[in-house]
Image (cartoon, rainbow, N blue to C red):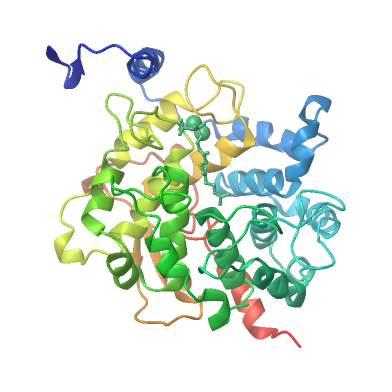
Length: 407
Ligand code: FPP
Ligand code: K
Ligand code: ZN
């Protein structure tokens, strides 16, 4: 089969649905990527658009009532990363989340709904973002701990909810919550790292469950979980084939788009700016600085994809051109932009298994030699590489939890 190389792109002659969709995506991005001037981050417009998500949802979005904590987390995280004032939403968030908490522990998607790890993770993160004792206090930590333990399985994994599925997403949610609220015990973390290790696939990527396809969303969940369980330089090489992981992660960035994809032979999507882009901070922290002479990914190209292709002209961020913006993409595109704009290092040493490991990160702005130039208009706030909240929020919640042990 004839293989052609045009503009650095390798194309074979085999036409499939996959190759057609890839060509279509390149065509859709082309006019945005070839603008003579890269668009600025449209901060005020995004803030206005995001604010709409905290007002009444329109009728057609009623199905999103099952993810009220998610909408609040996505919106608040995005607004805070943009530098918006979120303190005005604090009281409303607290009273709204109070009614989502289940008497037996955890949070549901809405009033009176069954507790589920995903909205519980979102609720705890949203409370961390608004911050303050009145916010932290609403969580029934005693009930939370017994509910988390009730989801723990023999093989080390966690169920999303009673009778639900177990996957690496559930484990990340459980460990993140337990770490922020200081609910760690050896029983809670038993078998976690071993189970996560089984999620690595033949491609080198990481899956939702052992045996499934490697995917960017789950890759972040596996890596962040491991980085909750121990220092990156200890746990990542211990539980994963590190070089296969790096090869698979590198293959997620596409040219000419510059954006990141979630899995082999699939398309770039703005949300993987975080799910995959966020993996790099964790992976780089596992490599000794002397061995990390060149960046492993192209931060500048990712920033370009985000600014050129992911901003909707009426505000909000999106998957790719020709798609509508939404709160989920706004949160993770902006978190990914932050991952591109800052460099993270890990300062902890052998902190141990108390889930305090994720509180030893340091970060600083990137420089030109990191492959990215950040104009002041485009700068977003620093995101925490494990908890995905603005820098400082996770630390404050943990500090409160340590100072207020459960009776
Ligand atoms: C495939 O979608 C993607 C998934 C089925 C799930 C991805 C997982 C996450 C985003 C992680 C969630 C994490 C938490 C903490 C809840 P697709 O087939 O539409 O997209 P693709 O073509 O890009 O793979
Ligand atoms: K997708
Ligand atoms: Zn997406």
